[in-house]
Structures are given as structure tokens and as C-alpha cells.
Length: 243
Length: 197
Image (cartoon, rainbow over all chains, first blue to last red; front, top):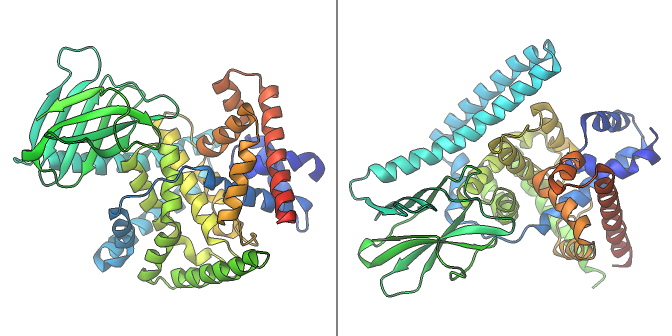
């Protein structure tokens, strides 16, 4: 195909959503020095970069900056990350040799497995935090939805570590909506405690980190809210766990 | 007013160039500055895709660490640091959503190519400016509902045109027309506004 015929595909290429055959065709053009497609794809990448501004502004938690800078600030941690990356690079190098001698389908399966391991590592870290909170003797356990057909589960309130919600039968929030947790002080207004989504199978695990004053807290609740979250509940709570 | 974009370009481009050099020298303080400059945008983008604050925090860390570890391959003179970081952030988030939903993710080699630092060179300086963000949002508002929806599915969910057709229950040809028209309108509106600005 000529560059004129490929012009409509520049942005799709930059978005990474072209089918393999279409992508390969454009790749060929991009490897030719002076090919007009190169400039076209560069403009397309600029346009795609600008689309990031369509995401509604969500302020990150203040602790995130420390977590990010901590990744490289502490020599001990830096060393451990270096080891991780050296190991990961070595694994990738070995796999690259293997991939070159294997069929394309096998390559795809390996890449999927790698990404699966990455996402499982993220899940494992979250589970570790949850177990630490649950196993603390100071944690208070609340049950909600017993005998009811809709959301049921447990809430663990740990005065030092935060609030952990484990729920089942919680249908994934529809498009444009999200679940929001509330900490309700006795006789006070509900305080927003973070946003989360449930899994396609209806289960949800959400951990809100930070100290909680158990003596003054009356209940933990969950409502369905617009995806940017709300400062006060706008719907009837789906989950209420009284302390 | 006409000098503003020029001043912005000189100021921001200069800063990013210096920051990129410091990242290449592996100065830990540069990581903090990188976060101050792009952390909020990266978190907002990732959160819009994964819709879970805990996962978004983990993926932001993964994004910044990836950029830190690959800064050696970045061209500080000609490279666009912000667009590169946001591309890494988007890829991490889309791959997380696709893998947790049991869908096929993009291959590791393809991903490697899409976010390689050498891809993000010779960009216009205002790609992530407030003014351009306003123009992008304005151009999106002028698309019809279907056109806007397909652009969001492609950008925030990484769906191919075939996957969009399946998701929307529409013929592939119809979806391709919406995508083509939407991108053409966005392209032309941004170009027109850039010329008249």
C-alpha cells in the first residue's frame, strides 16, 4: 500500500490498536529512510499523546510521591530493584532466544504469561497488606448482608492500619459509575474513604489505608457514585456495617 | 498572547531536557521532580483506565520505575519526556485491565516497540500544554456520540476496531467509518486551531 492509502491508519498505529497484518505493513514503511509515513506517524503520536488530557483529573494520594521517590532513594531498596531488573533482563534474554526458535503462537503465550505474573505480583502485594491488617489483634471484624441475596461480606477496622472491605455478590459498577467507601462518624457526616471497582465475578477487596478512630466511628458504608467520586453520598448505601 | 506559546515551549522544553539529563545520570532527586511534573497526569490517566485507586497507585510506581530504568535510551535533546511517560502509563494500565479480564494482551515485543524512548522524538513542545488540552477536549465535544465513544474505547481500553464492533454490536464497516471520521475531525480541528492560534 502507498503512504496515501495508509494515512487513515497512522493514529490507530499510534494507539496500538491495529491488527497484526496492518501494523506490519506500516512498520515496513517506517523502516524506510525518508518515507512520508514517518512524519505522519509522528504527528499521530502527538495527537494520541494529547488524548491523555481527556482523563478526568483525579488527585493522587499524598503518600504516592513518597512511594515513587522511595523506589530509587534508599540504597538497600535500589539494590534489590537492581537485582530484580537484572533477573528480569536475564530471563527476557533467555526467553528471546527461545522465542526466536519457536512458533508465533508460543511467543504470544509466553508474553501473556509474563504479564500475568506482573499482575499477580501486584495482587500479591495487596493481599499481603490485607492479611497484615486482618491478623492484627486490634482489628475489629464486622459482618454485613448476612442472609441477604445481595452484597455480603466482612469489614475489618484496624485503628492503626485502616479499613479492609471483602465483599461478594457486588455486581461491577456500570459504565460511568464507581463504588465509593464512606467512614461514618457517630452523629456526623459520612467521610469519603476511596473509590474501587468489583471483579466481573462480583467479588471485591478494597483497602483504605490510614488510622481510624474506632471509638468515634459509627459505621462503614458503600454507595454507587459517578466515576469521579463524590464528597457526600448521592445514593442509598448498598453496604452498611455498623461498629 | 502570541508570545505565550513560544515562552512556554522554551521554558518547558528546557526544563524537561535538564530533567532528562539528570534522570540519565540516575540522580534520585530527579525522580521527585519527574513525579511533581507528571505524577498527577499519569495517576489520572491510569485511574481512568483501571478505576481502582489501589491498582492505580501500584501501576504509577511501575510506570515511573520503568522510565527511570530506561532513561539511558532517551534522547534528552530531541525527546519528549512527558508523552513518553504517559505512553508507558497507558500501556501498563491497558495491559493490566486486559490481563485481569482474561483477554489477550499485546505481545511483550510489540509493547517494547510502542514505548521505546526513541519513538518519542521531535515532538511539538506544546503536546501536553493546557491550551492544547482545551483544544482536544473542545474537538472531542464536537464529535457525535458514536465517534466520541470509539475514540474512548481505543484510547482508554486499547480495543481494536474488530473488538469495538463486537462490544458495540455494530458492523465492522460502520465502526471503521466512525473511527476514520472521528480521527480526521480531531486531526483537522487541532491543525486548524494550531494555525490560527
